Amino acid sequence: MTSLPFSVRQDVRRHGRALVRRRNDVAVHLARLHASLLLDGVEPVQGALADLFGSFGTECATFKAAALQLALPRLGSRLAHRFALWVAAPALPRITPLATRWSLL
Image 1: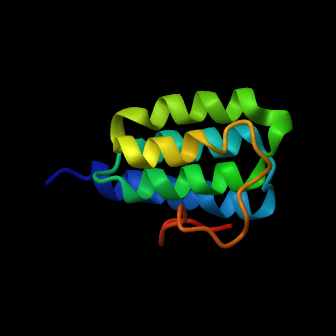
Image 2 (image 1 turned 180 degrees about the horizontal axis):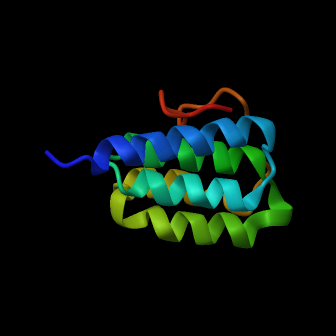
């Protein structure tokens, strides 16, 4: 096993800490989503996407759509559809079934 997964996990956590301080920082959300895409499984990507969708509303529909497009290859069709419903909608509520243990916000 290479050191890549540990390093990527550290990147996801580092971006997560920055996100707690700067919840509406588009660059931090994108960096965290990109790092999450390097990890195995759907859950890290879903958590990063849920935090992103929970931080931005209708005014950022284009950004949310672009983030969802990045994540699509990792999401199943039902999960992708559930996120797609929130692209042009207000921010996700704080408590949502779309959140995972990787969600921070």
